[in-house]
Length: 188
Image (cartoon, rainbow, N blue to C red):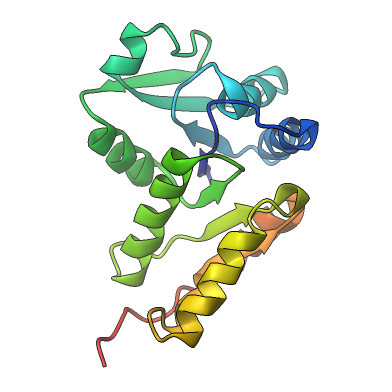
């Protein structure tokens, strides 16, 4: 693991624990010499994780669409910042640069990014790990939904193993190092 993409909120959320989790993740990435790839914003959990990696001597690559640069929310102190034309290009560039994907608490945009890379993994477009950093059990409703999808035969059980879930960034990254992707989705 040389580079990990992190998807997370552009706000800090309702609990101080979310910010502390972003800080812990940033420290762990810098300590392990893993480059952060993220959405390029200076706001919220996004800015927190980036600032933490940088302040602990790590490298940070941001990928931001020009419409957000124009709103003056791009981070000015990154190791590298790609400006792209669209959200689609942002997601594709982040996926290209990353060896895996970590999801911190966030809203619909965070979930949309996660579901895209998760779906890409199911159909074999990549074999990279996807992990939920389940700070204060934020993702418990989503995990329950995955279990319901399996019960209702809309998600093959083998793909549940693609979603690595931990409350601690150290444990989550350790799981990434041992990840083995399941076989590509079958349609029977």
